[in-house]
Length: 256
Image (cartoon, rainbow, N blue to C red; front, top):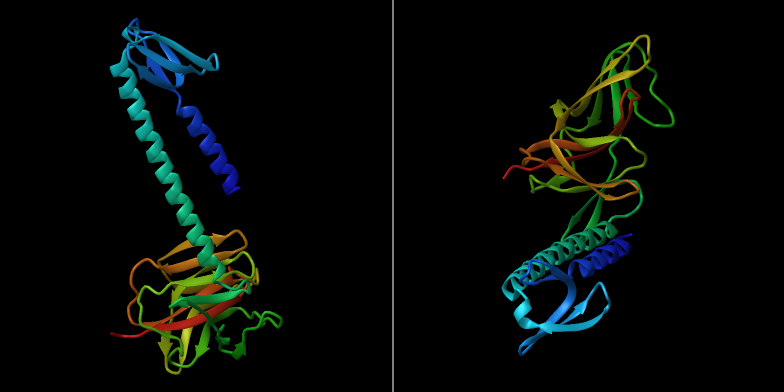
């Protein structure tokens, strides 16, 4: 697709390279190129597809050269923009190739790719705790609860408060970076409300403003915080609203 686009742009550029050779009577010829040869001017007529000549005295050479120079500068500018866009696209493709196609969260450090391990989360209600698993859903009893991770601190510690991650989605769902609340020996991922009639779940995580970039059409995204993260506990999360279907990859930003 990119090669086709480049071909179309180049073809358009070749057509745009034609210039108007103005005559002193106000008319013009569309020419591909021209050459001043003494008292005459030789030019290739686009209309007739052949070389022709006429007296130089009939040609408004100053106006012709000014427009030709402006057109050349415009084409060079467009070519530079196209080249830069192509360079950025090739770099993004190279960047995406570093990331495995398996669903998950990854980061790159010094040219090496590492994977975050998905955390085991549990639902805590007044009925107790249940491990959240996709194949064995937690019974939805009307009331309140929390989604929690065991341990007060994450083992995945980063020094960069603007840490970038790559998320390969397992399916088309919401995702983002959320702030975790430490409470004793657990970290709270989200507050939960189990609806009595619809049997849906209202999830209330604490989202962090993020920037994202889609790297490939098959669900690979780059995600990073919009502002530097304060030291603390965080997670990359993928979920389907109302379904209690959450995947959590926890990490922490260490204090300087």
